[in-house]
Length: 112
Length: 122
Image (tube, rainbow over all chains, first blue to last red; front, top):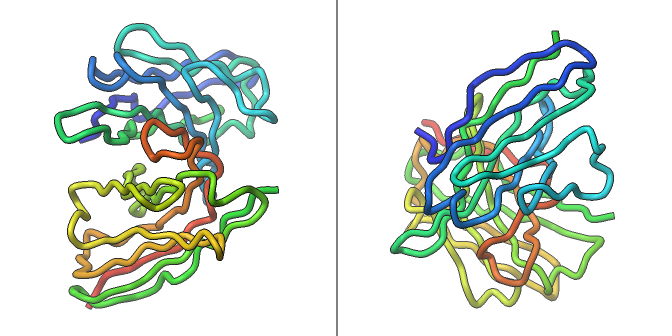
């Protein structure tokens, strides 16, 4: 059971806008920034969003992130077939033993 | 271009040991924290360990604490993961990841190596 909760699957047609949610708690998303990673089939994860809504260079502006309270979202606009991948949210969780890195269980995005 | 190349994975019996290496290039290795993240087949991502840029501070997930040791050789631009008392549940692809700061705390992870497969089975 992952500390951060994501829907296991999402889908959309080319050109559509889809959003993927990530729910946490006050000890993780509520007090720390959220990152999003994209994992294309058979490849290593790639950083998509850092600091809640910042895109690394090279990431298309079709991808955007937001955070509100203890939840975060990844939005993909103008959906393309090459966006079909697994998407993971991540945050640091502050507990009595110190910070721990936690991930969501991942959302498999299908482009219909 | 930043490159991270893991090696050392393979098949090992339960209770055995293995050392993973991550050879890096394209950035100032000694200025960045480094991390290990693993992924079992068909499963999600699990944070394993982090180490500060100078090697003076480390973090281990509860699932590997006391069995795994992360170290680094800044003169060789190389990160290591010494794994002992391996269990079948340690079977996964292990990714070497560059952190965004000097301390392992509160980093984002970018980029990731291609991963090396560790299989623990008799």
